[in-house]
Length: 138
Ligand SMILES: Nc1nc2c([nH]c(=O)n2[C@H]2C[C@H](O)[C@@H](COP(=O)(O)OP(=O)(O)OP(=O)(O)O)O2)c(=O)[nH]1
Image (spheres, helix red, strand yellow):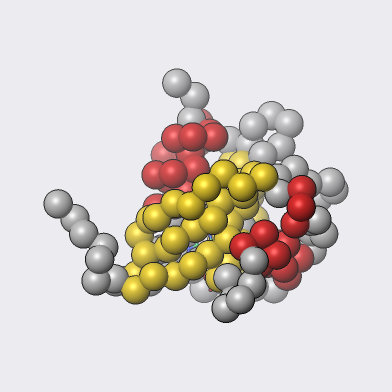
């Protein structure tokens, strides 16, 4: 059995954002190769939904009212880009108005059709938690 008990925990808030056709918004941060949910680390004392709104504004220029983000739950997954770490992710579903504009820290932003996900390098949280629940067709 694989255990993550000795690995470092990174607490993040992450967004599941779909367009009308079911495509998922994913980002690739500068200097990295994996696509993942928009979002980022929760600062000490910060409410997860507030962290989410802050990260979405910083990364994509999106203004989100934290109260409108629907909390899907807490999920654990191996961390992308960092060995010996795992993320404890507060996952939120939300809809956005207007097209996001990636900031410099985002090297690439895509709307991914779930059918094409197998061709992509994805963070474990996206591949193992988000896609099976919100993307992949049966
Ligand atoms: N945003 C996000 N981060 C993820 C996902 N999956 C995953 O393993 N991570 C990892 C990657 C990073 O190690 C960490 C997020 O940290 P980050 O460095 O991008 O967050 P941040 O924007 O707060 O960055 P910084 O201020 O610490 O530089 O979580 C995911 O789906 N979305």
